Image 1 (cartoon, rainbow, N blue to C red):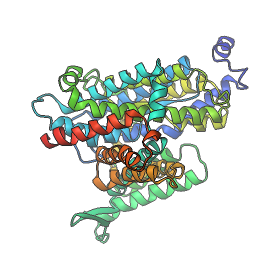
Image 2: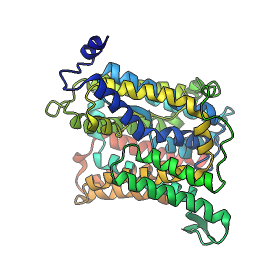
Image 3: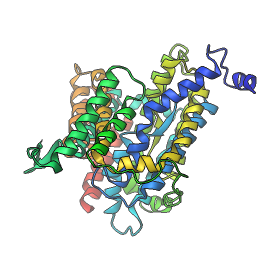
Image 4: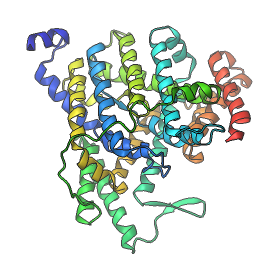
Length: 457
C-alpha cells in the first residue's frame, strides 16, 4: 500500500516520504484551521452585524467538508501540496456586498443568502471554463497585477478594522471611529482584555514562527475569556458534526439567471478574485516546493480546475469562494512536496468537524476571534509593497481601491472606484495601449451598474 501511494504521488522522486507528507499536512492544517472558527461567524453575520439567516452549525460542518473536498481534490488531481478552504476576502465580499444587494433586489422574494450562493456557484462555473481555455491567460494579462494586489491589501485593512471593532478597541462615535474611552466599565474592559491578550499572543507566536500561531492565539483568548466568565463550556467538546442540511444545495441558481444582468458584476468580481488568488498562491507555494519549471507551472490546468470545482462544491456546502491558501507554504517549509500533503490536510478538516461543540462555544465570543482578523489583515497588507508606486497610472487606481474599500466600508465600492478610474487614467494620459479591452468593458459595466442598478437598491 505504501509503495502504491509513493508511486501515485511521485513521492520519492520529489525527495519526500509518506511520514514527512503526513506531518506537513498537519502543519498546513494548523496554520489555516482558524478559518473553521471565522468562516461561520462571518457567513452568519456575527462578525459584521449583517444577519444573513444562515445556520451556524450547518456552516461549521460545511466549511470542514468544503475544505476537505478542495484539498483532497487538489492533491489527487494536480499532485500539489496546496490546501484549500473558503477564502478570506471573498467571504466578506459575500456578506457585506453581495448579500445586501440580493436582499434589496426589486422583485426577488426568496432568501437573499441563497441567491448570493448562486452568484458564487456561477463564478465557479466561469472559473472552471476559464481553466481549460486560453481565456485564462487573456484574463490574467488584461487585468493589472497592481490592481489585484491593491484589492487584497484593501480587504486586509477592512478585515483588520472589523477585528478592532469586534474586539471592542475601536468604537463608532459621531460618524467616525475612535478608541474606546469607557474602560472603567467591566462591560468594556473585559472584551478589550480578551482581545489584547489574544492579539499579543498571536503576534508573538507568529513572529517566533510558531506553526498555527493564529489558532493558538484564538485558544489563548478563549482561556482568558473563560477565566473572566465570558465563555462557559457546558458540553463535551466532541460530538457528531452538526447537520449540514440547512445550507446544503440551497443555492438559488434560477434566481441568478432571472437577475443575471444585475448580478453579472458580482459574478465577474468573484471570478477575478478566485483566478488571481489561485494564481498567486500556486506560484508562491510551488516555487517554494521547487515544482516550477522555469516560468512554467506543470499541471496548472488541473490545479485551476481543482480550485474552480472546489468553489462550485463550496457554494453547494453553503460557503463563499473556496480557494488555494497561501498558508500551504508552511507545510512545504516542513518538507511537503506532493499532493499527499494536501490530502492529509483535508483529512484533518474532516476530523475537525467533530469538534463542533468546542468551536461553536469559542466563536460565540467575538473578542476571542477578533485578533485573528487583525493578524490576517496585516498579513494581507504585504501585497502593497509589490504595487508599482512609481507609475501613477497604476498607483492612483490601485490606491483608490486600497483606500476606497475601508473608507466606503464596502469592498464593491472600492473596486468600482479602481476599475472605473484605471482605463480612464490610462486613456487620458496617453497610455491607452497599456491596458486591455477587458478593462474598458469592465469599467463600462460598472458605470452602467452605478447608473441603472445602484439607484434601484
